[in-house]
Structure formats: C-alpha cells, structure tokens
Amino acid sequence: EADIYQTPRYLVIGTGKKITLECSQTMGHDKMYWYQQDPGMELHLIHYSYGVNSTEKGDLSSESTVSRIRTEHFPLTLESARPSHTSQYLCASSEPGAQGETQYFGPGTRLLVL
Amino acid sequence: KNEVEQSPQNLTAQEGEFITINCSYSVGISALHWLQQHPGGGIVSLFMLSSGKKKHGRLIATINIQEKHSSLHITASHPRDSAVYICAVRRAGTASKLTFGTGTRLQVTL
Image (spheres, rainbow over the protein chains, first blue to last red):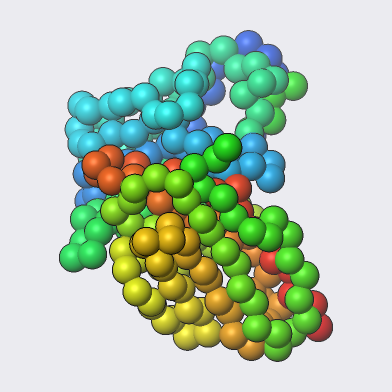
C-alpha cells in the first residue's frame, strides 16, 4: 500500500478564494506529480518535480502553482479559485525500479468552486 | 486523436466472464502501465510492461510493441473488479511522465 496522502479529500469553496491542496508521501521519493482529471476524462499532468527546489509545468496549462521545499511535501495552490477549476486533483510520486518507474497515487481531492 | 486509445469505453459483464480491455498507442514508448481507479477516485498501479506478458492473480497483461497494442485480461470476473481501468504510456525519452487513455469503465454484475 502506498504511503501518499492528500488533504482535503473534498473541498467546496467560493469563487475568488485562495486554496492549497496538500500532498505528502513518506516513501522518500524524489519525483512527484500533480494531475487534473475531469469526470470521465483522462488524467492530465499539470505539475511535476524531480526533487527539492525543482518544479516544472506539465502538459496541461494550469493557473495553479506548486512548491517543493521538502522531499515529502508537494502542495498545490490556486490564488483565486474559479468555477473552471472544478475538477479532481491527484498527486503521485514515483521511484525508479529494475524495470522502470512505478507511480503511486494519492486518493485525490475533489474540488468544487461555486 | 489521443496518443493512447482504449476500447471499449464501457463494459458490462456477468460474474465469471472473461474480460478483455484493449489499448492502442501511436508513439514510441519505453513502458506501458495498466492502472485501476475505483469510484472513490484512488488509483492503483496494476502492471508495468515493456514487453511480453505479466500475470498477477486473475489479471493478465500483454503487450505487442511492433503493433503498438496492449491488452488487459480479467479471468473469472467478480463484482469487486468493477472499476475504471486506465492504460498509460511512458513516451520514449521522457523519463517519468505518463500519457493516459480515457479509461474503460467495467461493471461486473451478479
């Protein structure tokens, strides 16, 4: 079982509010990822990090920002939430293995912006 | 057109049936992943393949690199197998980033 956690699991918030979605892993993985998934649609990578103080934007443009001050922690922030940000946000981490990398996913945060 | 296509999009089966989910991709890859997503949203990695075939319990995954195609088989399906099954590929030269299919929603009934 993966030791990767996300809080909150569900969030309903009004337009214009600042929100931070938390993601933590206790596996010591250097690589971490944020994905956005709309209902019935595929996951899209919005941010990734290959280690402390390293962050990159993913394939899908996002107004969110991330930080990686500690290995275990990779929070995602929206400065001013909008209804278009309503989605599920999934955090993952990975480690290299003999046959390639396996990604471990958190339970996700379902965000609804009113 | 998505780089990763899955079929079928939805699948309903009766308990005990043999199930096949297909994945085709259009890019060069270094590995292909099969993932399972339950209604609560959590995702579990089932297989990572770069060639041949892997088996874990009632699940079997195969890949044909030349044909750019992979299949996930479930033998003796059970209602607890009901979930969305997602195919994802790691494009050659991209280290860790994955490209995902839209998933196949499987419902197994009694």
